[in-house]
Length: 229
Image (cartoon, rainbow, N blue to C red):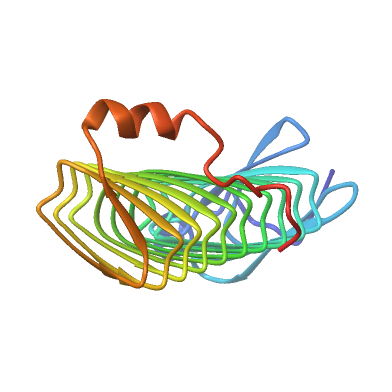
């Protein structure tokens, strides 16, 4: 690991301290507010105060940044904690805790806790716990709990529990329990339990007991989950 043109020790700059990131790379923790930190392969670069990019790294964790923005591209294991916004493109396992905005595209697995707005596209395995708004498109398996608003489109299998409103569009199999209003159109099967209201058109809607939904949620979310997307 090599640090290039980074001035992590500058204490006279209030801006530098405010936008200090903590990066864990190759098992080594480094404070950085400007410059580039090289891995083998890949690199981390502070592109501007409070904005950091991580590219091509096998494993990287980024914390803080004074409410900064972090963008991960083509990383293996990538995680962000305590940042304002985080985006991931074509990464392996991704994890976010406590971000106001999260965007994930074409990643293998996604694990998000306590987020504001979350946008997902073409991800395989998704686990979400606690947040404001979720928009997921073309994801294979999505498991979401305790979100204010959930919008799912063209997802193969999904489960929503303890959410506010849930909207489903052209999904294959969706299990919804203990949510508010459930709406949507053109889904194959929508299993609903203990929800406020249900208005899903052009779909097989099954009103189930809560135990039945929990039992089905333990089964594969889609009978054809191995199909190519």
